Image (cartoon, rainbow, N blue to C red; front, top):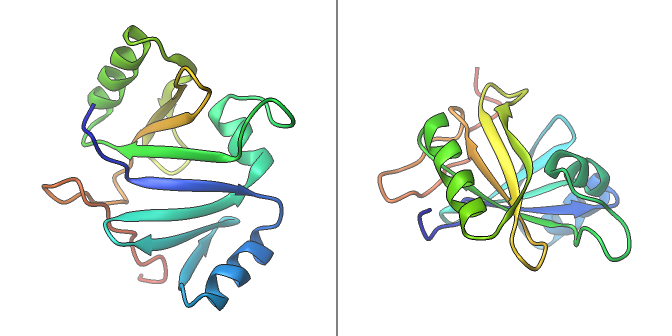
Length: 143
């Protein structure tokens, strides 16, 4: 697994309220399907409903469960997703969502580290990676 983070997703109670807060700070986001993406240097900050994020990651919400934050690493192929998930399991991670095709045309799975922090490993053809692993949020308004 490369030593890199592509996206940080914050599980929020109210996506519109959270987006308005970050925009008052001067950030500019793009919303797609109740999910807001902010380009943040070479990675993306994402706002998504907390319950949806927990369900997608295959973890339990609420007290003592899911902390509301997920880290993601985008990789260059579906085979790399499988490789990273297997390596994480071998290292002691719990695979909480085995890799599968996604609604956005990609392929992804999730694991938690020994302290319960969620990692999504994803191949997403719509989010290009530079040679150094830098992620660029696409322009969702472009035709």
